[in-house]
Image (cartoon, rainbow, N blue to C red; front, side, top):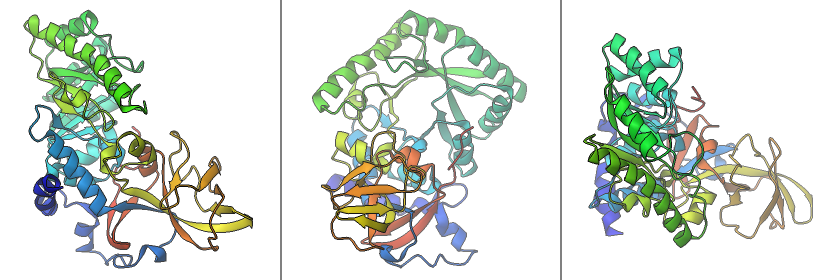
Length: 394
């Protein structure tokens, strides 16, 4: 993978020079005691522990950036996937143009660590949040999604009073059925009303084909996702024909990066999971490696072929189904609804105390449960990165 090496390796060597607070645990260790886990084999770690295979993640970062290197759309990764500042810095060092967030609190973490350009791909509502938003906009370039004039007016008033400017992206509902104004005339009319407000700048459109990203058949997923995104592109063309410039159409995902992300009229791809990967997304885009796992131990062997692990839904997101166990694809997990236990069927002859790596079905909700990523290569711990935005729900 020469292209991956071309962009990835040299760029990632310079992560520590990123403007702002120096990333990860490395900076903290200059003034604190060294983490004694570094240099130890994974088998000696306590469990459960959230792990990241650094080499696999770096290959994923470079592979995604390389895909867009000669294409019009650029990569704006979704921070909600891992919520880890060091990993976000590595994404920018590899060639991403900025970061996407799901919550204002995540954006605050990024700006505090020197990130200059952040999109909050969500609606920001309420006086307390608006006060935080405009303070943030005085420190960095901030964009926010809106789907109603009332949201835009409230942001306009707060920004004007603070002397700030907030970029607005009109969110267009292309089938997700969540937030978003309807495509075509409703979205175009809202954009025209927003464009005249003080303290804000109409920066473009946002659309997410999230209702289609889990379609397993890739050809079917591609066709349906492109048809959905075309609605947002047509809305863009309608606005441009009316003389309203559309600076950006932002959307897409790790599962549709090579379909909707290649459409003329799409400018930014908000892919997130590619940085870590999980069981579900690896089924969708197997060209990316599963770099994320949770180190677990066998704590009970209550019967023949049955094993119990020391992790349940409090330690791994399960909304996309049960996890799998690395290197044991044929092992069945019939029960994963307990808070602290996973039950394994047809287990090999694992002794009590056996260390395993569990691959969660959903990386985003898994990372939100932890406060750090223990980073490894070749089975040895090489670093520990804080997950600074863990639990940032507001």
